[in-house]
Image (cartoon, helix red, strand yellow):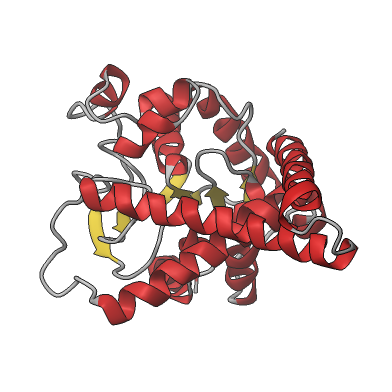
Length: 306
């Protein structure tokens, strides 16, 4: 499980930084100084990682659409928000996903349910904030954790299929809405390639590397290789007619995405394209703008049911 792996990484990291602080940085200054040093080192290391992703994204950037570039005044808070999202997602929520998420609350209702699918190296805890916002707006929301963490994206399609059937059985709905973040959008498309669109009323992808991301070259596992630009698996997925899409399909992306690069990789033929400027890749987990986008995308389905 990803949660167990992240907990082990956290324990190992804390031990490493504590040894560094105890025997060198604040040697002899007491437990309080050591704790502060460990916290500072952990936060600083995460800040370095986020800055590195933005540097890599800049090197492999694509032009922002007209009117969607951001200046320095907007870029600084954007980077800080992405750093905070990184700290909270990978340092707090994902390692303790069971505590934060609990069971999905599935019950029959007048609206189609929504199935949220996370991205690479995450679990269902990624949706902690967005799931709550959608539920507050009256939507029934389901999640799943894709396992194993470093597998072929094709291996996730049967898992999505099982969860789709479980959600439809629990709610009595004939169709649901698939929402995929990052790799979750590719997992959704592999499900559609295998199962078709009969059970899917709408597909929404958020920052999904439909044409790959250069950052995937730094990842591990078959799924990372499949997300490299130009690889045979991705080319087959993108072959015209290879993947049926629901008539209502939307691909949303940020021209300032720091994980998907080039940033126009999410442009998916056959989908309505929505631009969400000034949002980092992980910040989508907590972004009110993404919440509004999802609610706007779901609104026509609520109106149909009404």
